[in-house]
Amino acid sequence: MSVGIWQFFDGDPIGAVRETAAEVEELGFTQLWFGEYAGREAFTQAALLLAATSELVVATGIARFDQRSPLAAEGAVRALGEAYPGRFIAGIGGHRPGPRPLAAIRDYLDGMDAAELPGQPQPSPRPLRLLAALGPRALDLSAERADGAHPYFVPPEHTALARERLGPGKYLAVEQAVVLDGSREVAREHVAGYLQLAAHHRSNLRRLGFTDEDLTGGGSDRLVDALVATGEQAAADRIRAHLDAGADHVCVQVLARTEKSYRHLATLVP
Image 1 (cartoon, helix red, strand yellow):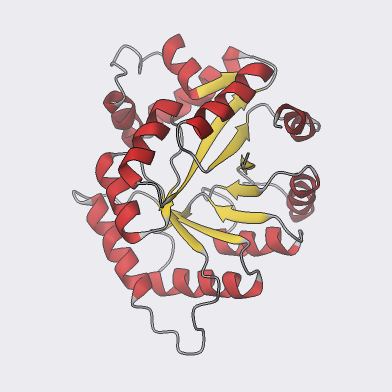
Image 2 (cartoon, helix red, strand yellow):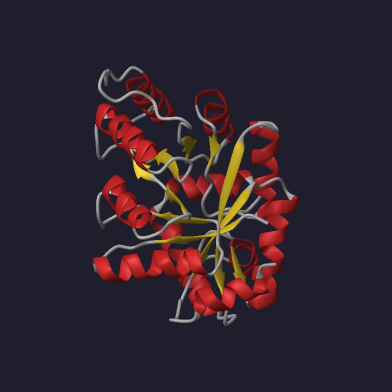
C-alpha cells in the first residue's frame, strides 16, 4: 500500500516543519504532501522538507500556478529533481479568475515546457508532474499533458471515474481527510469550509450525484460521510477503498491532529 500524509504547514515554525517531515519518514509513510495557501512558497518549503529527510518523497499539493511564472516553476522543479533524484513530485494547479480556466493551465504548462534553461537541463529521473484535477476535462488534460492527477476532497467513487478517465498508465494520488476520534463535528466543519469557499468543489460533487440539499447547511450527513472518514476503522477502510478504485497513492489529511495522530495512523495502515 502506498499511503502518505497530506498537511498544511501554514504558520508552522521551521523547526516544527522539519520535525513533522522526520516523523512521517520514521513511521514509514511513503510520501508527504502539503498545500500552498497562506504559508511559505511551495518549492522553497519542498526543499526544506527534502533536506530534513533522507528517503521520503515530498509533493506539492498543489503549487499554485498563479503565484509564479512558468519559467520560475520549471526552474524550481528541475533544481529539486536534480538535488533529490526520485524524491520530488510537482503537483501543479490553482484557480485563476476567468471564463477559460483549463486554457489558463494549458498555457502555463506550455510555458513550463518551453522554458529556456540552458544551464539547467532536465534531471534524470524527471520529477513527476501531476495536475489538480476533478472534472472530466481536467482529468483529460492530466492524461494529455502530465504524468497523472491529484484529486482533493473526493470520495472513492470519484477515484474510480478518475482512473477510467486517466487510463492505466498515469499516476493517481488522492487526498483523503480522516478524523481518528470519530468526531462528526470536526468532519462537518472541514466540509462546510470547502462548500462555502470553493465553487469548483461544489460543481464536482454535483457531478457525482450530490444535490443542492446535500451541499447546504454545512453538508448533509451523506456528504460528510462520503468525504471524511470518521473513526479508526473507517479511515483504514476508506484508504483501501481508494486503492481498490484505482488510486496509486492515498495521502491522508488528519483533521483535529494530536501529537500522536500520525503514529496512531501508521498502526492502521498495513
